[in-house]
Length: 178
Image (cartoon, rainbow, N blue to C red; front, side, top):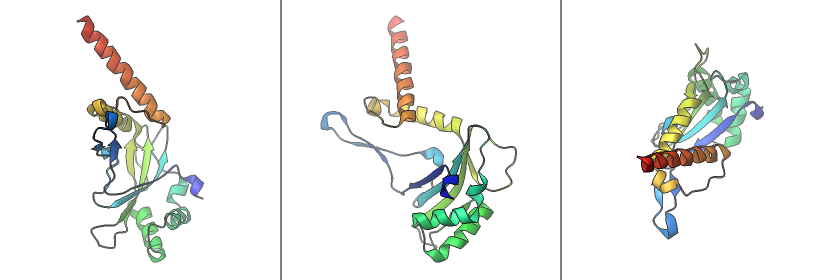
């Protein structure tokens, strides 16, 4: 059942990207993924689908059995909280598993896609792939002096780094000619 889902992600409240300085210099901590709208101070869990076209969830991402299996397998909450959390996810697209404490766990359904649906018949957050690309490009440009020499194993991020290096080289050549 879990194979019906594209994304199962967890972010802890104090997560940061750490970029090591060159030649043993200070490490730099950068805030992560603001576009994902993580709930401050809580563990954030995303159950999501990624589509090339319209952002939407597969039937499995809304199936109570699949959601129950995911929450149980992740061990994110006591078994007695799983069914109410599943009900909240289906009804609201989110579930707050903090039990009223300031620390806790937040789960949400997220549909990633190239365009928004005219109208989804179920609640979920929508994040557009174009917005993710723009956000990553902005992030690279803002922190270019720290990360331009870094090597990334992720093929998508490596491609964005290559494009940014090319853009930087073109801009540098243009400035030299002027």
